[in-house]
Image 1: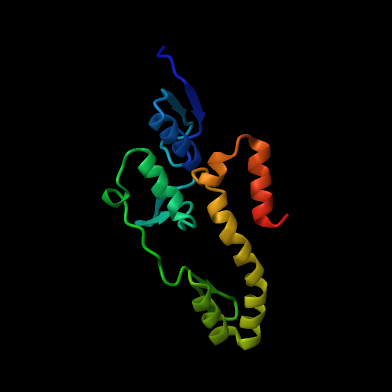
Image 2 (image 1 turned 90 degrees about the horizontal axis):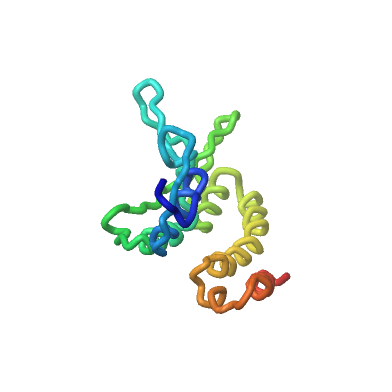
Length: 168
């Protein structure tokens, strides 16, 4: 049997990402997957001749995927083209109400206003405001490649930096 430096159990998106990073670091990696194909929940199936996604169809942090491809020595533009669908989601309710949700918060608020009224849009905006502010800081901080986190000397430092950025 060939010697390996690391064994990754599970060929879902996390296992694939871990294997790519380990391989890029020069580690001989064995990826174990119980299913017939890789990808975990991210796959497709055909129902009545129509191919549909079986898992994630939304990429909320594209910079993570692009960084992973760069880590593997690949030029992202040579392999994928990311596009923002508009609307991102469309909800159909039992009373025949249809609500479009967009990537841009302002567009979603406009959609809520047009579909459910001004009061609903104001309530959604009030609900989202503090959450959006909190998301913008950790979006950068949680990334392993952030210079602030990389410069931390141990897990305690990293936790302290994250807590400070989140206002905890």
